[in-house]
Image 1 (spheres, rainbow, N blue to C red):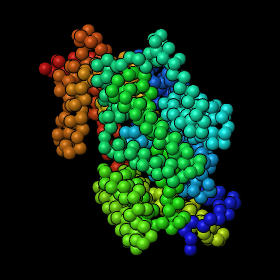
Image 2 (image 1 turned 90 degrees about the vertical axis):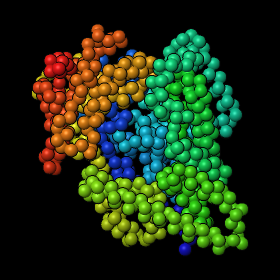
Image 3 (image 1 turned 60 degrees about the vertical axis):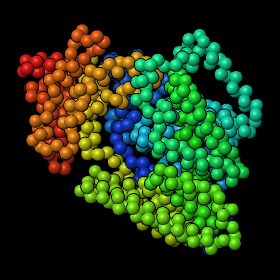
Amino acid sequence: MEMIPASTHSLKGPYTMFAGAGLGLLLILCLHRYPGINHDAILYLAQGLKHRWPGVLDHDLLFWGGGQEHYTLFPWVLGQALRIAPAPGLFMGAALLGLLIFAIASWHALKSILPPIQRYWAWVGILCLPAQYGVVSIFSYAESFLTPRPFAEALCLFGIAALARRRLHLAAAVFALAALLHPLQSLAALIVVWLWLVIGDRRWLNALWLILPAFALALADVRPFDGLLYPADSLWLESMQSSRQLFVSHWQTNDYKFLLLDCFLLALAWRRRRDAFGKWCCAALLGLLLGVGASLLLVDVLHLVLPAGLQLWRVQWLAHWFAVAAFAVMMFDHFRVRAIPQAMLLALVVQLGWGESDWGWGVLAVLYMAWPWLIAEQRARLGTLLGWLFGLMLLLLLVSHVSNELKWFSRSHFRWDMYPFDHRLLAFPMLGWGLPVLLFELWRRWQCRRKVLLAAFLLAPLLIMAAMRWDARLPFHRLFEGAAGNPHIFGVDVPSDALVYWGDDSPLGSWLVLQRSNYFSASQIAGQVFSREIALEGRRRLQRMAPLMKDIQQCLVGDMDTESRRDCRAAAESIHLACADARGRGDHTRPPDYLVLPFDQGVRALGVWTVRDPYTQSAVVDYRLYSCRELRSAMETKQ
């Protein structure tokens, strides 16, 4: 039996369309589970609240001296939506909507540049395979929490589909809308689009003349174009270096591994596919090299302010999207001609590249490229033997992955709400992608009766289970979000203009629960690349709060016994420094008005909020609200 038949009649019909869409939805629900309001969603929550209640968050560090919210329409849209729906439900629903729109846009783009069957293999790969790019511990396309990035990325993909159909005006309108939501993701995609246009028509090189007006505005000191000529000063640069993603030279091994693997896959697809998809892979490869190279030169070497904010390395989001599709398409090509050993080798390369090794995949990548010369027809038996060896290595990696996940699952007392074991199993790239492709191929081969059985007794129950488990918020996060919009949760009235320091290095409590300005957290200085004032004020507030932050972390360590945890508290010197009056400090930095501490400081608190485990009803943590000035006075009196 031929692995991939040439006929595509089995792909037609409403049942196949519904089954294919259902399988795609299943993959989204299984592999892109909702983690709650975390990561960058916290920052967009604050931006939305600022528009919902003008004036309340004016003193928040995130908005000090202006920030990135001035360059996007999304915070205003979010602020209007918060007038209609509470934040937890709104963020969950909008996050799912973003994922669905991204999946639809991906299919639409692939349909424009790939033939049938191949486009479905590629689509499954985009939904299943690792989506990380840049600093891979931070960024990925199709994020499962609410940010404008999935919506902007989806619009860019719709724009690519329009370009592939030569509908330039529609594409321009779609990219303009994407830029209103997230200009950085849109600019990154436009780099690839421009190179694709240049490959087709050299006259598009004339677009480079647009650099001249930008330089003219820079010479006239018009913001933000003036940053095109001026480097960041030493203090600003030192603060920005805490945002590792801004400097390509500061990335880690895993980040470079993803980058080089993308280059490898794009180069292969470009050389092997002499069609529309190969042309797009060529443009993506050139765009990736251009964006990362320009970022290295302009930011890491010259330290220019505007290029640092533009973050041209973000072009990797679209390059990685094409690289993932390229892997799936090349796997299809191998199976179509029954080149199973090469398919196993390529699968092993990407499995190691996206997971289990640092640079071991590089050796196998060289072997893969040299395969036509090393394994000729007269050595077919050797090729078959190597194919079995590569398959065995994949199996051993899978067994190791399963055993490791079982270990962590058991340490979580086999609680699915604490450790999503099923999701972690499918995080093994070749399992998460291989199973859906296998189901797709079974569907294409089976007769109508078997298809009905497959849909009714496998797909439908799995969809129901996945929908029930899509909300993957940890119990603690559920409790936090359940208290959203409750500024009186401590039993006292916290003034609307108060500055609150929430002592777990997360502003979520101040913003989501109290709906008040947060004094300092590491995430609040994310916009420092757009504002020197945020960088410098963040530096001053960190110097004030650092000893207290250290004391809090020492009291929250997991291996502390119950008695030591009960007696743990911040040092008097830390409280004095945190709450010292601005006039007593050389930098005149305003202290926080209130502290929320996760322990008893030995002084009467204004109020206590006890967070309890929803299953055992035991206290997880007692948050205590203190007036900073009163706490400082009480601590000084005790001394």
